[in-house]
Image 1 (tube, one colour):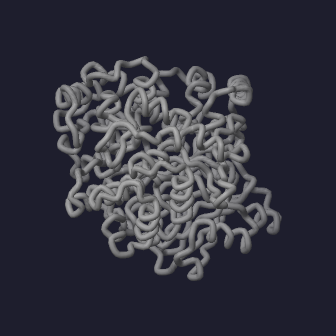
Image 2 (tube, rainbow, N blue to C red):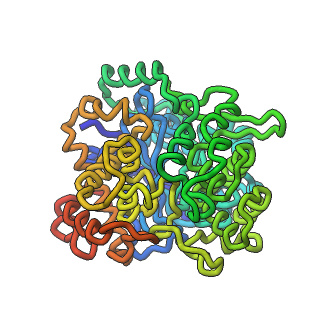
Image 3 (cartoon, rainbow, N blue to C red):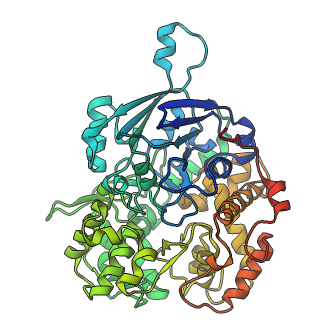
Length: 572
């Protein structure tokens, strides 16, 4: 089976040390990305760890396709213990970072410990050092620790500017946190390329707790991975020739369709459709798009560099989830206001979904829907934990009672736009997903939107849900962009030199390891649920447990864990 290559590099920011560990056997069975990072986290993060404690670990991991030039592969995975959900979370981001990380020779970077001063960490392939010593042995990753007190409170673009001035590297070589991460906002993002986010679950706050402002990557020592040219080139050609609406409007192209035919949650879930959907939807965004944007090596080019000539507002996006969170959820019907909010979240380093929904909860509590200026003020106050922003920085689950609003989260994670009250299969997915209310954990929504699955009812959907979770677990390990599914899914066997069931097994092991990790932290059946009722939901959850092979309390049976646990090196 095709898999990533390269060692695990453990960077201990307390001791200022870097240690290399061979993980060849783990990579062979787990491919890369989310699967490898989850196996390492399960073995090496204490089950009773504090998400903000030195013992928590963050994994930045690549897959084998990050060494190809195929479209839909400019992504990376990040995994750690979430301060928002208190469980294991994985997030992935696009941009241009992945090829630079692979160039250092690594497959996985692990950050552990906690620094007593703000740090920039620089990872290179050590090639210059090898050449200067006259060595003929392959270069090995080299790590430099730089104290950066002057970057305290810096925005993400300001941090990128510093890296450019001092290291001559671009934002594509860097991951960074903004003020939100430094201030331990529970939904702070880790950013790359200034506008691409490892968004969900608050991993930016984990880096903030470790006092790591940024990490840079530079090198030209990618280990060889043999990838079949035929399917890769077919994918690349079809991506370049596609006339999909998404290439012009990104994910916002579906805004009006979802609003009219299904549901676009509006005014903090009080309404199911937004009267100004057209004003913030795909056509409105396309009008502001001034050039093409893409991720590394991708001919599909679905990103959205946008600019409003009248106000000078410039950003990348907004994508559909941001249109929902800072548009319909807040009752804001001006695309420029949504663009402003998008740019603010990117600069401050926050997940737009959780930030926007949390602000919407506050607007509901004071009856200020439609007040975009107040929404932006609250967003900034959250990042600095200023005044009411301190409470909102904890997320909806922890502040909803004081606000007097419903707790619209699952496992502490704020809902994405795709409404489980209408898409019942997606609702079931939200209820049982290890990450909580994450629409991409299984993407049942695409089947229900397309008419391939009846949106009504929860029973009888568990086999489909389990297969979708397994497939997504593998896709996140490959790593393939979710928007490449129509181009890549039928070619996975050829690309990875494995049977489809083998690929699904990789995803299944990943899902089970996540669930076992969470169960050992105290998660049980009571955590699998929704803040609203759905037909036969409890019976559907029991059905899911049976199909997934879980115990009645939602835990992973010991004999199942013993049979699937991959070989991951311990932290000792």
